[in-house]
Image (cartoon, rainbow, N blue to C red; front, top):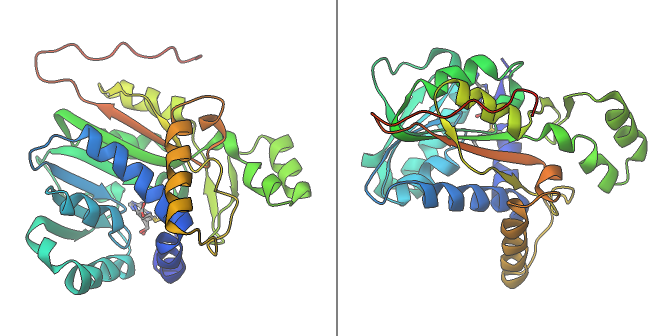
Length: 269
Ligand SMILES: C[S@@+](CC[C@H](N)C(=O)[O-])C[C@H]1O[C@@H](n2cnc3c(N)ncnc32)[C@H](O)[C@@H]1O
């Protein structure tokens, strides 16, 4: 496993930049729209420094953040104590990776796994484990690197040779911003995996279409940031724009008890 703790400080800096915030704002907006108004039990797998965990808890939900990196989890705990102490009774932090989640028999109204699959070799087993923890009526929310956009960031940054090599090779892996190689998935493949475990896929969104190639020094004024966010939100649902987003946000819901599950999407589709 990648020791994410070694790049944790860099990730925290990115997370708080306008470019990082754009991602969190888009993902949180969709998630909060799909969650029930009542307090929901949410599991955030690979919670990192806790950004989404805290946002969901601040909206009134009870959130368990799990991460295998002791250093990332320590940073989440530090932030909880220092900046979000009012959320302490709604947040639980657990040191565990997706391979060994200690929640036998426990089910959640929503299971999130954001920015994690890109560090794992294969999404099938993790998605199976995550889907198995979703309560009837509950949601699975996955944010993954978009396999279809590999090479786009490099091209827009002017690194034409790398972009051409990545696009020509058809690879599913490219260097990420933190210096770690990261693997992409397609939204359709993630939807098929979720459907294979009885969940019904919901419309997926592309996250960071027009602003991914900027660096973390991008510092728009508040009005420009709002305009950028609204543009990204509008385009996030639509092809061809969403197809070249750096990330895909897929969601799937487990049918309520007694209702029919999804028909499996066409594997060739
Ligand atoms: C890019 S950060 C994302 C953090 C957070 N989910 C977010 O979206 O801001 C990736 C996180 O995945 C965690 N991670 C790495 N391998 C994992 C695994 N096998 N299971 C769960 N989390 C893992 C890392 O420790 C790190 O905290």
